[in-house]
Image (cartoon, rainbow, N blue to C red; front, side, top):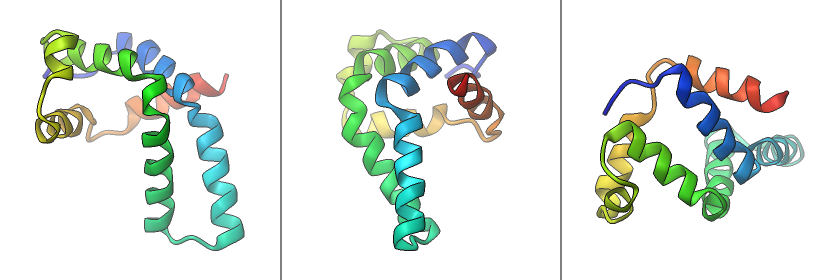
Length: 108
């Protein structure tokens, strides 16, 4: 899997937009305030909301991962779920600067 590059920010922000990341985060933060969620509950709620909306950006997400991995979108979509999740984990940078850049682009 190749390293994330500046050219990956635009496709990633498109995915964030399609799943409604800004609205999801806003709702989760409101939920946290009203229900006093702890950090784990907050993350679980955030992940749950992203999963609920995954179908809206599935094609873009598969294309994004295939561009990082070098396999076709069809090959990625045909992976066993465990391998697919491992691939996603591998794609997540240890330095969150990429996600901060993508998030700041999303807010504009």
